[in-house]
Length: 382
Ligand code: SF4
Ligand code: SF4
Image 1 (cartoon, rainbow, N blue to C red):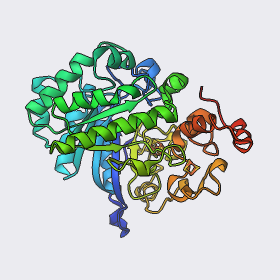
Image 2: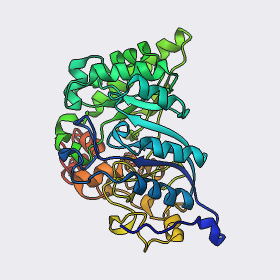
Image 3: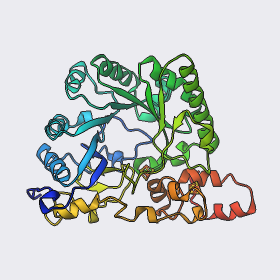
Image 4: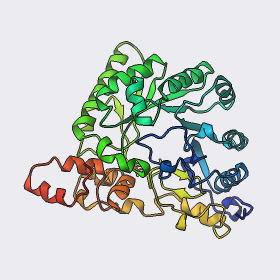
């Protein structure tokens, strides 16, 4: 691979695009094999992608950071703690005054690693627990990792590394969300993401088993909201936020003020772009297709610094938000919701003309003749 020296887009006089977040997938490898993993390469453990040299990863990071101004970087993978590039990239980010956070399964955290991470003053490390006990958690992550993850959270906190929690809400664990939140609380974790499962990549094979029904998600969110009220009643601060959009045609979000909800951020000033393990840029972690046309590496000589900066230009330069599923035509939430998760729609139905599979599963339970006509056009997810 040729590595072309990079120059800031500002060198041509154009201001650099301001980007909210860039996720860097440091490695395709992971020590777990979660049923809900959105990595397309999880089936072979990342072998088909390979492991990029540290020098190449650093060159890609420099190439992108020369083109944009970024509020923060999210280090992810695969499992970032399994990447040789982790600390070199953290050093580079610190030298460039870019703040970093990390998504990790936590199971590889040793005392030594936690002490080393503490020196970088990360925004946080986001660790996922999918149940309050080993049986439920391990059944979803491909092996006996629960104890190691609990120990990893403890080591990070012991070394004063900020830890945030995450729960992927699936059909299997939705009813036990209150217990899982209580486990996080017992570990001292008080900011937790609730991410309803959205099928993509490897997880597509498990869609029918894992996509929770609207009733299951509603019940889980109500339990979570009750947990927040209880905690706040005891004077304890706790923050719950939903990382995946929950379309308001499926769940009445106004009844759940205790939880922060967000629409799909693509094409807005909250977007988190992704730099993948092959050097490709994607709209988000769940998206299969690269926005660097032909899935090419950001280091390719044919991609000039100005062309690269243009990919991040403000105001939806890719026209992503111009596409609205036909199902959503006329909906009063269409401008903000845009049909839910477009990445999952593409993975499941092959097109963003279809609604998010979670919305489709909701529509499938509809009974009116009008809705049944709509339902027949929707992909079956179960
Ligand atoms: S835009 Fe579509 S998915 Fe979103 S609330 Fe409206 S109908 Fe539902
Ligand atoms: S397409 Fe789906 S996963 Fe990607 S940013 Fe939007 S809601 Fe999130």
